[in-house]
Length: 406
Image 1 (tube, rainbow, N blue to C red):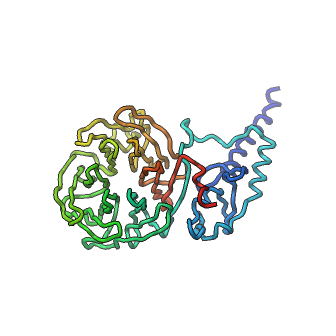
Image 2 (cartoon, helix red, strand yellow):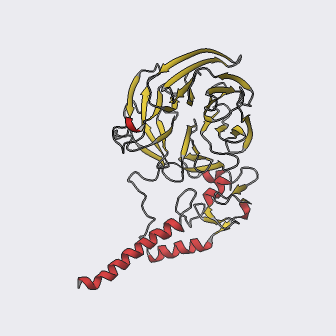
Image 3 (cartoon, helix red, strand yellow):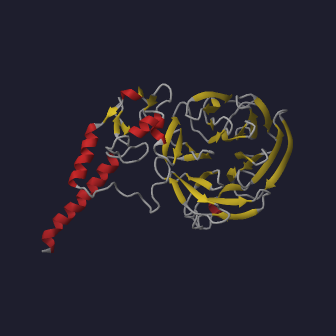
């Protein structure tokens, strides 16, 4: 009797696998990785004129705020938002599956922490406007988004809705040209600070791109940059294993103080200062011989007080940083630390890392290689995705996605 039922059992298992493949290959938007829906104003599948299919939410997010034109994220062909149309065959396919298998749901994601509490709000950039981007920052006064990348002009400035505004910092090796930018920060007064690995310097510009100052006599490999509570520049030196503080008179373009704050760091890269507490977090990248185990995470977070006293550290053996390879960090307005995992393509909140760290998934889908993070005062998360050369914004309110673009 058991042998007679074996083929049926195998068939049922095979059907389950086929349904999973249908959901992942046909019924899932390959931009936001959400399952298509037939509900009004939800993630309905939309055909682009080029033949690719994405959801209505991503059509709205990718469309320019004024011209309502968008670029296909797969083949880069441009079209009008009005030129897209509903993919009825996928709607019918989903309805048919639900009618025959009413209990069937999209396949579960890996892990037990959910798919993230934030949802895609907007996407801008893409190959051409951004080429191999490495750093992102936001002006707190104008809300402009600044990205450093490998284009002819190394700094691109976008409005808060993703519209291109201007670019500056031409490629070159002169004092105020930029060769190989790695990171960018914006001071409270609106000055733009760029780390340039090409000539081992830090360069300061006005928000419109006028050169202000160049600091070129301190660093072996300047990498991460941020600004502390006093408006002073913090720069990590990945080769020397140090963290520097640079005090400037920005109006006169004069460096007042250059102070070594930390040394003996292990290949420090990203750095972030909490605007709520003044604490500073540095991401160390451990070399093979420095890892406790070969399969241990390559990164370690060191947390310092505002006067650079070590408060603690998190690594791969901590339950609050299990196996994460941290590429970038930021603090939100409440002082919670947010980290990007470059290997898993995800973003996590660690909460208050000094008191009681708590790992919460913010974004677990739709990112290729997150390289930069900014959390705005409006609780919007800005993620620089170097994998597809874009800037992606996330919010906790999915309705925001449609609010101004329908």
